[in-house]
Amino acid sequence: MIFNFNKHKLPLGAYPDRTERTIERWISNAKDSEYCRSVASDPRGQRLLQAIAGNSPFLANYMQRDANLFCQLLQDGPDVVFEEILTRVKNTFDPFSDTATVMFALREAKRHASLTIGVADIAEVWDVDCIMQNLSYFADATISVATRHALCQAANAGRVPLINPSTPDIGSGYAVLALGKLGAQELNYSSDVDLIILYDPERLPHDNPDMIGANYVRVTRDIVKILEERTADGYVHRTDLRLRPDPGTTPIAISTIAAETYYESVGQNWERMAMIRARAIAGDIELGEEFLHQLRPFIWRKNLDFAAIQDIHSVKRQITAHSGGSTMALNGHNIKLGHGGIREIEFFAQTQQIIWGGRITELREQKLAGTLNALVDHGRIAKTVATDLIHSYRYLRRIEHRLQMVDDKQTHELPKTDEKFEEFAVFAGYANGATFRDEISENLQRVERHYAALFRDCKDLGAQGSLVFTGNDLHIDTEATLREMGFKDPARIFNTVRIWHHGRYRATRSERSRQLLTELMPQLLSALAKTANADVAFIKMDEFLARLPAGVQVLSL
Image 1: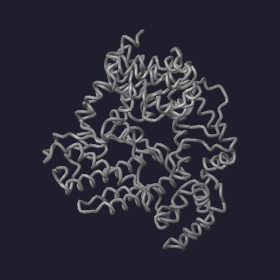
Image 2: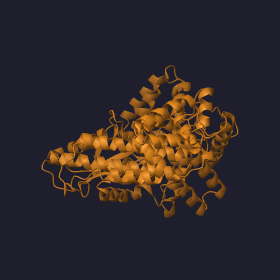
Image 3: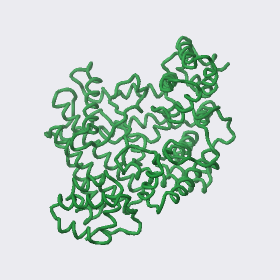
Image 4: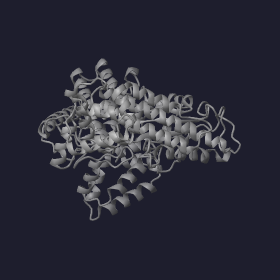
């Protein structure tokens, strides 16, 4: 009657009253109300319904809205239902479908997938690796359908050429790369998808060569609309296109030639780390894989010079690393970006991949656990370190999924109030908040200890706190540090430093000058902070750099 699971592994329901109302509406909305009542009266069924509806308003809403799918899920189990959802998504594409039809079908599939994966997580019939993998499978499938549809629509309008409208992606010269957690097939429950869109203008003949770039930008906008526009039926995925080369100046679809030129001339070490997890997932897969093959010398340097190693080390050393022995304030703690969090585990692995992966090909792994185990196999870290970090990574990812499952929000923060913390602890499977605090503290501090030891012998560059200028978003700790130093506009400082790092000034175009900037940044900002007006002093420094004909000599002083 109900799929097989262990009811003793289920969390209790934090909101019993909400559970009763949800069950009543589910029964009234379902075709087979008799089956629903039998589940609600069954002890195992009761526990499962309480665990879902009593903790996640998001899933409770989908239980009611897609009542018949939920009945099928209870009967057949997550494995069967998820395979059916994937098959349905892959069959969604039709060259003659209109955009509204495709958007509806993908949003319905997203609701069904979210409910299925959520139930599998709560019932613990899938482990965290399986959940991340299936979230990624679903994203791959939906992005592929959106890409094929957008290409077909553009071809019908005469904007882009295709070899065959029935298979518009094959040989199209338009490729979608996934980066980040989707690239590594370790996607979050409620996450943006990081994409880079590439096109090769010479792959197929174009009627209007001057409009190639603009036409592929329009295709990209159509894909983004299909995936993330919120309608009455929901959305599919939030998309983030900012990991492309120099996103402040480049279009959202960039030619392969321009991208290769960028990486070869001004590509940064943090971008090398980001590209480790890049994967061609949609459009012209062959083109995407060819591009990544061409990029291998940039990502994996066989003879990494000392200056590059120093740059990698200095990125880490700008982060204030704690030894892990102090008490950590857990209310509101960010388990992704905060101390002892997921990002520190990823950085631990990726920095060593960048340093050693050029010569040790087995380190060119995309998944976190595989990378850490490969580092053990080649004597770069101790087995106990890998075991600890893999355990904590899986633990924190599981907690992250539960946080996001409450309201389908891309959050990584533990609840701020004691009351909400207690409620979430129940959803996370604990008897009370104190037990949860003990275990999550143990994991966060374990990560901190290993992370702090990674560059123990290196001089700490972060004089007053974290100063991280890699990536596209202002790090929460970096913003706090800049404000504590006396800067009133941290966002402007972050964006300006990124301009320096992208080599838009003559003084910062060489790799060595950018490495020196990374090394000097904490001392430079500390000096500017001591002036009468730190923000004005920073602007003057920016103007000075902009006028310099070259930077290595000045920055080396």
